[in-house]
Image 1 (cartoon, helix red, strand yellow):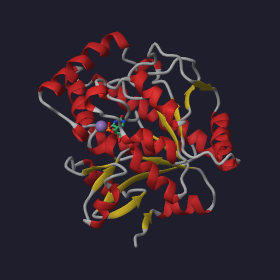
Image 2 (cartoon, helix red, strand yellow; image 1 turned 135 degrees about the horizontal axis):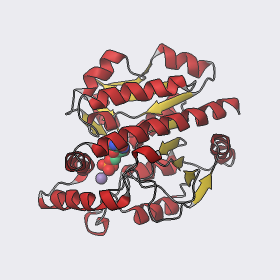
Image 3 (cartoon, helix red, strand yellow; image 1 turned 45 degrees about the vertical axis):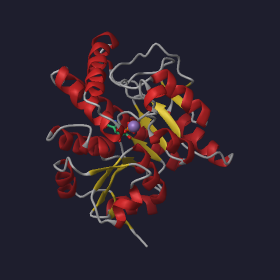
Image 4 (cartoon, helix red, strand yellow; image 1 turned 90 degrees about the horizontal axis):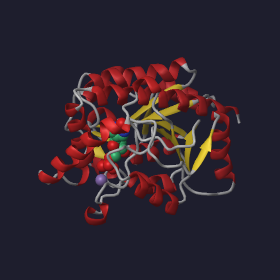
Length: 302
Ligand code: PSU
Ligand code: MN
């Protein structure tokens, strides 16, 4: 029916039970501009290798599932802004049509799990959008966390979202939201959100053990690890909040909806901060990759 096209580097790590960290590709095609997106994708893979794990960037190229991307493919994809944005609903259709698509958190979790990868690093997950009581815009990433057993390391839910509502939905879905190393939930570009994190853990080993314990208990779904952005690159909430509000207002005025909302907001915030948001976004992705590599190493030891 289909085959997973796994690079030899990733395949041998999986065969030998060495640590592997999955990476998504929507952040490359829809989350950042060229060429910073390509530079970020290369650096994040390097950070994972330096930490002693193997990176597996995931995408669908001409209908083929790729677990690990060759450099030329990564470079091409980073220059394909019209690649499809693939969530759970879109994956099978993209394959049947032989199309190229970048995987969101949800689709990356599905494919990572198929390949036997348990740890995944990204920037921020999708969640409940502000005004969702009218738009019903709730990311499929939340449902996926409820059903697919992958530990996802993010810097919290993206601050463009309604974070309290996102936490409520995650609680309803039975997804553990675990902040690493502090008691306050981080908010993507900022280390603070004003919200107490539902759970806290201070070591990669505890996070790995919790993942394995869930499996042993036969509890479906994954874990969300919220890893605060490094101090040096943080944008304080008071600086970013008015900019987020302006970007959301513009999205409403221009009737941006569905899949286009998140890419529009990230792009406008990049422009309105003259690139500062992008620098922070790259920093937090690299930071998440480092933690994910530590978690993956603990999982393969267990
Ligand atoms: N994190 C980032 N930038 C991004 C995304 C995450 O730092 O662009 C992407 C992820 O792929 C996530 C998606 O799954 O945004 C959420 O989109 P939506 O809100 O439409 O579900
Ligand atoms: Mn949405």
